[in-house]
Image (cartoon, rainbow, N blue to C red; front, side, top):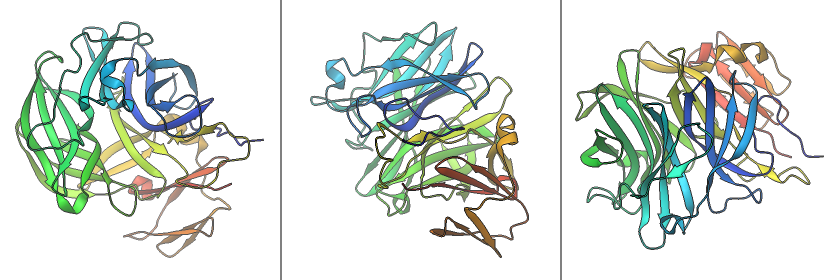
Length: 358
């Protein structure tokens, strides 16, 4: 019998990867996600959909977006984000087609369940000269009176985050390269750009490196350019990737990531693969991003686990992987599930997500 997770969302059937369109809308938490509903493997991407009232218990709803347009006929509806305007929920996503490649499109909903795709899609039909055919994962947010979109890209071996601006969410103007760095990989994926503790944080996942990792860049933003001040990587687990954040009705900045086994065999008979991490609240402490489970998940935490061993400033998980902390370990919290463990060190200064094999 395939094992099911108790405290993490996973699909009833099929494949799940990046969380998309995280938002608190009309009294419910919505988590959309990259989804292939027909088999536990990657396929033409749909947007799956789940809702929750407490961020711990999730109800899976019907698929929100299907790849049913000609501008989605080669890969489907890839990752993106959600934003509310005048009581309408907008979903922004990368549409992938044979003719146009990776473009950016939008769908609308008044009830948060049934979506209608914009007749003028794609709203961004081609990548700028600063980018390349790798042009995806639009994350939209409102800063002051302007809507901003960040997209992941890369060119000439240099990973980049591209910035767009809009007044109405439909007409977008290119504003230039927000960030670029060859040391972060050839392509930067799943970017996010948000305010936290009086600063701006740019978050993205690194593609083309030996390990899957997510980078946080802290700095200032004047509406046009981003000035970097510090970097950190609070989550260092090998099975954590492509997180996204949103601000909920309690003014919390919450992050959810993709939790996956990366090549380990599925349980025998399993027709589902992948999960979402426990939602984590972000804060800025001593110039670094801290991530810790939301208060609704605190009762699930414990201080010890048979799978976690501490020796000095080292943590060993399942006698398989060792994580070395940059500072002394003074406190530890563990969220153990049937086939995953998430370890939070010193109140979330560092975290480590791990998926047990079969």
